[in-house]
Length: 572
Image (cartoon, rainbow, N blue to C red; front, top):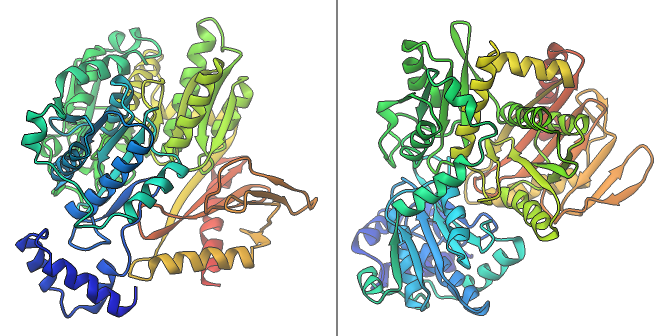
């Protein structure tokens, strides 16, 4: 927007009788802050395949009841165009998550749509499960996953239980942008919607069905029972996993589940962690203290909406955090091994991973006759592969996972599930414990059998009102002047997922990626991979490094070289 348009929209908020006095006071406090006005009013919070995500504040570029209401009106219009149906709504433990969920229910009800509304915070995968369980046309989940406390978000799901496909998200975004933020959104008070039977509250009965589906995913139910005295420390990081993760582990037969008391209760301020993300070592600080006092070998953490799971394992006197790539490969190998030990690996067995996930997983599949499918970043694409196989009536799905700590075994849901991941990791730890092995021993065995692989991720912050423009400029510059050498090795292949091309620089051949368009650049040398993409949920560009080598030290040296080369590449 021009400065005049920014001021016009700002004044419209101040004059609207739909805007609360509290929100108007918030806006008056920034009247002289040009940068803040630009951040809030220069553009609208965009609706994409990941839905909405932003900081909670007044303004068209923030998460608030008005932007959430407009997004829901857009979704309601899209659902109406598809013939209507029922929608299920869930939310996490973040500040305002319940408010935004109730706002969404009010908008859907005002549009004549029936709604199932959870009676409290639930894991994201339970929402995905509930869409399928109730045969709904769509679902809404209010969450910002692992973002800091200032953020919230809004994810939309379709009838298969997966997040909206790109073309669906575009259609919803179009309906949304055609809707006036204040005058175009229909709302019915929640109490009235309940009285009219348009909103039905759900809770414990869905929990039971969901947990039953999760428990069915155990590879060998006897493993945990045989090691029932094993102690596991768990922290929900103040999030939605606080009830169901411990309950599932106990129902599986584990007797000693210790929950970090300081992080057990839901709290949207996340008072014990700055960044409630199991990818970060700091998230395990309190859990390590508890685990050490009980001589525990396994710590599990889940993020606020319980779709991501991370672990720490005891190595000597300290604890080692395993990456999402390492945990995913351990789980994949465990599942494959169990298949081999119990009748053989199905001829149609397959697994799915994202393009930024370790190639060690591909090596495991290749060595065991399992087909590996690579998909774009976003668990909905893993869900699409599962859906296609179900429709074709062919394929035994073993596991889907992403490097960003997301895993799914089973087809009861179409999103990553920290609850089933916690169960499977516990079962796997019990399996190796019975053999006198730790998970570190199991990981070392992977590298011996399949080769040494390593991965790393970094980010380039692009905050500010011009963040999106700077991200786009960086990607354009890389496309206009692609690197020919990276980390001391010649670039052999360039995959441009936006253009949909794979270019072999050695032979000159060019072929399609076979995947939907996405703003991702992927460079391959003999021993390393560099992947660059703008984040879809945060103002930053994500940079992924992958390396292989004869030894762990060689892999580490190559990853260090990748980091240094990336600095030069982006400065240049």
